[in-house]
Amino acid sequence: MSNKSLTSGQMVLVALVLGYLGLILILPLGAIAVRALDAGPGLLLEALTDPAAQEGLVLTLLLAGIALVANGLVGIGAALVLTRQRFYGQHLLDTLVDLPLAVSPVMTGLAFLLVFGQGGWLGSWLDSIGIKIGFAFPGLVLATLFVTFPFTVREVAYVLIELGTDEEEAAVTLGASSWQTFWLVTLPNIRYGLGYGLVLTLARALGEFGAVLVMGGAISGQTQTATTFIYNALEERQESAAYGMALLLAVISVLFLLALEWLKHQHKKGRLA
Amino acid sequence: MSIRVSHLNKRFGDFIAVNDVSLEVASGELVAFLGPSGSGKSTILRIIAGLEQADSGSVFFANQPADHLHARARGVGFVFQHYALFRHMTVANNIAFGLRVRGLGRSAQNRRVGELLDLMGLHGLGQRYPNQLSGGQRQRVALARALAPEPQVLLLDEPFGAVDARVREELRHWLRRLHDDVHITSIFVTHDQEEAFSVADKVIVINQGRVEQAASPAEILDHPATEFVARFIGEANVYDGIVQAGQIAVGKLHVPACGLPDGTSASAVLRFYDLKFWREEAGIARVIRTMTLGDRVKVEAVIDDGPVIYSQFPRRSSLLAGIEPGCRIQIEITLARLYPHGDLPLQ
Image (cartoon, rainbow over all chains, first blue to last red; front, side, top):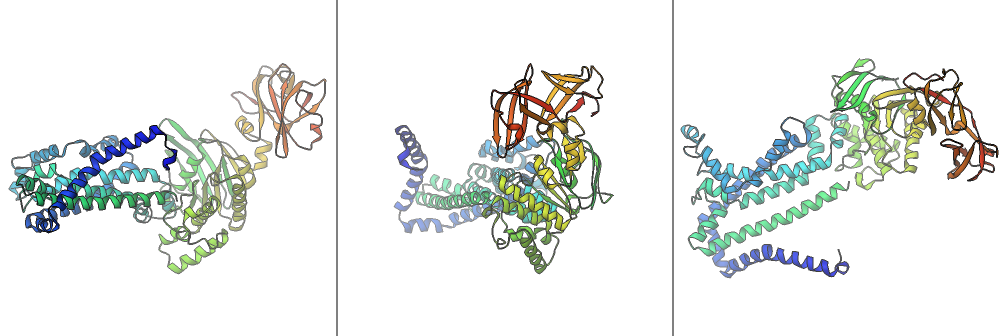
């Protein structure tokens, strides 16, 4: 796109969009970077080597890793079911996939507590066999899985529809089993879409706050994640720790953004085939 | 391997795609399924391949029922309209796919791939990816891939639909030559009559999910079994009328209706090449337009007190002498076909 071809009206529109993006995206991120670096790199490093910060970070990364694996498997399976099968209630399922996007994470945490928390429907029974979910690690896993569910399913389903069934049918007529068709034809074709969905999943898992706060309670050293660490640090006026962690998360997000761009580019290249 | 299909039915919702279809393809034959789009010809092909389940009816390979066989176990080579090449694999890996999933050794795979690349005129393209090939090359890769596991039957769904006219012509010759070399029982689906007649040993004309006629190209051209075939094959004028005094009057043009009793309602089908026009002031029609179509000229005329009629002549035909827009012409019918409504054709 060349600037020369823009009319004055279009230039105003572009300026408005850029100004808007600057205000709501770039300015806040820049402010965090400036504020965090203001405190000096030494202090920043010190804040991040604090055991509570490290435990929070490790917990968040662990949750993100679990979400990655679970959504990788379930996401592909659900996307295949949604796009390659015809069954009763399919439309309902298709709608339900988007539920976590529509529901507030805080509400989600609350709902999970009602079911799995102490005195919840399943909570008392789980308690009696020695499994604790609310305010414990399993609760954080559940909350994270819930909020990250749509991303991989949606991306993979989208690619599967775009792909059509021709190549899979060709594989079958050439004598491939369902398993061979999946590994040799379907999976290589959806790999960039899958990657895209998984990076979105990671980003969401890393950034989730409301559900893990309500479900986990942000107990330092137990259920405190990176985001709830920031919240607690701010509450306790440990600002350098809060900004340090926020900057670290921001840097990771930028890396994800670059990964998404690369995956999008690869997918486009592959589609030209 | 011979193929027999018996009383096949298939619906998609309310749409009847295949309506009680029975047909036979002899071992080693090259057969075309010819019909307009949406006629069900591709669905029949996909049922034979096992890619689609029939609602009822049976498919037999070499007189053995094949309905219970999964598509991967039918030993059928299938060529898709849009190639369906594996876009993330090289040409060589595409062709080797059917051998690889059968667990054939690496060196045997390579040998077979080399043979097929040579046979298909794709030498030196083995390491390319599909998106680096032309349409004609892609379709030849698709053909090579289907042939690699040495199938007993080759099915091609509109195989040349997605390439331009010149390449299509070339691919037709390929298919015909290939079949003459390999003699594999083959069926291809097409909506292009020229393609069907120039390539196939036998043409099966399909319309609205039914077989209209199954015969040699010459038989279908000379003796169309139904009104649909007569209209669809070649270009024709069609007039509906009622037989009176042994003929149907189309304006001043009288179409002989020998054998049909007076009062019969019928369609008269007049092929372009079953008509003769020549210039004559006392004629029964007036020329409106002449159109040059390559080596042929199409003439459009209006019959006195009647509708428009078309015919087509070689450019150097003596019949065209003096024919120009506005002139009067005489019309001679060399062959008329009559199809009584709601009844079987007489002659």
